[in-house]
Amino acid sequence: MDAGDAAWVLASAALVLFMTPGLALFYGGMDRSRNVLNMLMMNFWCLLIVPIVWVTVGFSLAYAGAGEYIGNTDWFFLKGMGISAEDAGGDGGTLLLAVAFLGMFACITPALISGAVAGRMKFAAWAIFVPVWIVLVYCPVSFWIYGGYWGEGVVTGFLGARGSLDFAGGTVIHINAGIAALAAVMVLGKRRGWPKEGSPPHSMPLVMLGTGILWMGWFGFNAGSAFAANGTAIQAFLNTFLAAAAGGLAWGIVERLKDGHFTNLGVASGIVAGLVAITPGAGFVSGMSPIYIGLAAGLVCVFAVRLKFKAGYDDALDVVGVHFVGGLTGSLLIGFFADPEFFGGTNMAGLFYGGGAELLLEQAIAAVVTIVFSFVVTFLILKVLDLIMGIRVDEESEETGLDLSQHAETAYQTAGQRMERV
Amino acid sequence: MKLVTAIIKPFKSDDVKAALKSAGIAGMTVSEVQGFGRQGGHSETYRGTEYQIDFVPKVRVEVIVDDADVPGVVDTIVAAAATGKIGDGKVWVTAVEDLIRIRTGERGADAV
Image (cartoon, rainbow over all chains, first blue to last red; front, side, top):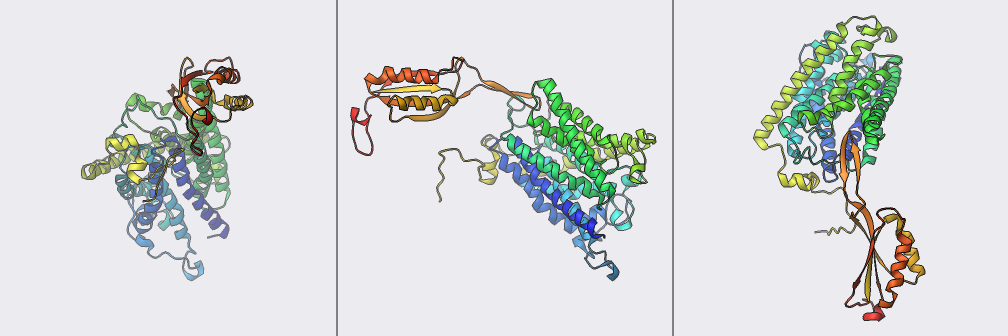
């Protein structure tokens, strides 16, 4: 692998890792002060357990072999992977780089779900849920879109092979985790007092900090997915920049018109919605398209987050409204905006770029398949966990806060509070 | 001896403190409180959901003075704390039965 390409992908992997703590702060700031440490821990847990699952079985199940539905065991425990140079029969470490880079994506995907279950899920149940979900949901869905590529050089996973496009994980990560979040809150139930008793964000500065980290990290997420420091990476970088800005503008302006003020939370949410929406198309759209995609995501999601009140599901921090809806919007819009000529690509073109409705249809099919599979399996995993150990904290813990009951920690000391060593 | 208690707007606490010092008051106790009277709270909106906050942050100033100094101190506080806008607060006077300076053991008027 070219040194420049490897350097960029290594840097991108580090950027993507940083997104999980960024997400933790983004969600943590939105949560109550009595639950912020629990939210942080749910996210950091993903960075602890997923790397282990990934290098032992996950990467192999998500990418190995030439199957249609799931990877084989060839790469369990990173078997056969090394860093010997190409002229010595090795690949210089390219496959290990893929393990590292893609492992970061595997870490953040379950972390996305944490925002929906905020404030009422037993940490022990979350801790078991994450690795189980990676193996039973993330790896299959990932294989369907990307499987076969790293072994065969061509995608054999049945959705990718049909021509559906997902540059950096709009379907595999955002639609997947987004709908899984819906399944999760349906098993878990509403927080006590929801929706009548609300809880506003306890620290907007943390939310904005998290947003900034996510935006910066997303350059690695999208542009790094070119797996090279080339023109596609450059365009993906620019797309990421523009879609975020457009999303933030759209959400901020709609809130200004609807609720009367231009808010930090609105702008932060719009930025994230834009970033989510451009993720599947980052290496497939050109010119002003990212602006349209970002605007559309901001516009659709600002209303999508209000759906939970009508439908009655307590998606605490709007994972469904932003990640599921944003991911779905962006994924379908590729059906309009994909521009293979710009990239010298062999994929289908979108409706506005000389293509027919075929690409749009494939995007829709991939979305529907992912939605049904992820929802059903996630629901079952949590139902079983609930039967075995109960996944919800008791009433008192929920009232006094999960930081204390789950982790024996408090985030903020009140003035005059005394603590003595035992 | 009397305890003069004032609930004032937080941004006025520096003015009140300075005015009391100029009037010769050597000490005071200040605490951050919340409350409401005729001034209502405010609302905040997060992702389209509106939240109502009934309480307004205020500062409580407490000064112990000799009976003779009470009218002067009350006037000083009112003059320094007033803005003319709703939420300026209130001042009240209560009796103090005994007063002791902890360091020296002085009691009564000597301890003021």
